[in-house]
Image 1 (tube, rainbow, N blue to C red):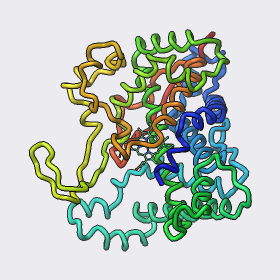
Image 2 (cartoon, rainbow, N blue to C red; image 1 turned 180 degrees about the horizontal axis):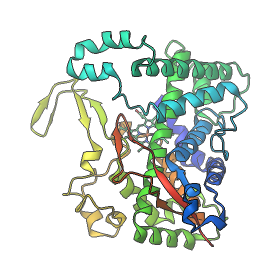
Image 3 (cartoon, rainbow, N blue to C red; image 1 turned 90 degrees about the vertical axis):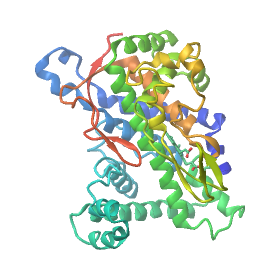
Image 4 (cartoon, rainbow, N blue to C red; image 1 turned 135 degrees about the vertical axis):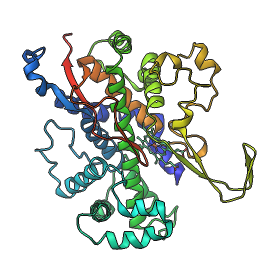
Length: 400
Ligand code: HEM
């Protein structure tokens, strides 16, 4: 199964996604447009502040929507909050998804059953069953959202399943076709299972990438020396309308690479990675029997001063390939995409999307922290890291 999915993330397929990604990025960027005559006038500051984390979530959802479902949700269209996609089942579904990712934030700290489960684990499930029936509780909201999401998703899957001819460019069509080709058992690939896989893909690919994109812009805007170097590299690449190829993205932006790595180290979006031992194994002097759950914490590794001196400082140069720090570092010290046979499938996809977005953004704008934003930045620690109040930025159009 993993092999089937991996084929979607091979370099040739990724390169073919470039125009789609670029067009969503250009569309999302229009949401940043400010009137040039308003620059520099403090009375107009409100007009220049944007909730960047929402723009990036919409963008990442649109992009993965096209790769996972072959559907353009249209969330990145300028003022898309008032301009919903035509297909109502899709718009319902995606509104639920945005709601669950921003409002519910995958943060279940408000859920009584979760809090109770931490204190008295065996009472968690019975309490959840009761609380999910009481309107207004977090458990009720989560249950309702999950039900809505899965029924919307089932509709999308069923509709695609009934299509006679499927374009094999997206994930959903690909797995439906693998199932139809009888390479895998129909009993295994039930509609529910396919819906769950497609949703996992959407979730894995949107919130993570959006968070990372927002943290890069947030961190760069707080470090003018980094911003200057980054813009120099981006401007040095070529004309503003020259879209870099997949090859350019991989090889011609070494400083951007460092900025992305350092941002992902600074705010590691997937703080925990789980594994189950397949055989008895000794780790760090502890003998673990078969079937033991082992939790890896890439976010903790990323702050280890042995591998990252002055780890509390944002310093992209620490990832300079020719630098001493990079050469001396343990090869597994920085693993934001995980490691081994279950490493993130979408790593190259995400990197292509992030690089393309950053290049486009800094060709046209620079950013400052909005005074309305809290300092230091407050985070929610859930399955993935999220911003408590979003990333609010002031947008300044570049005069180039
Ligand atoms: C900055 C963006 C991203 C980060 C930081 C990230 C991080 C991760 C991490 C840490 C894992 C667990 C790896 C392990 O267990 O060793 C993972 C798994 C996964 N990711 Fe990503 N991811 C990102 C973007 C994406 C994108 C764009 C997609 C889809 C296009 C995606 C799809 C997946 C899938 C399907 C898995 C499960 C793989 C498996 O269990 O075999 N991710 N990701």
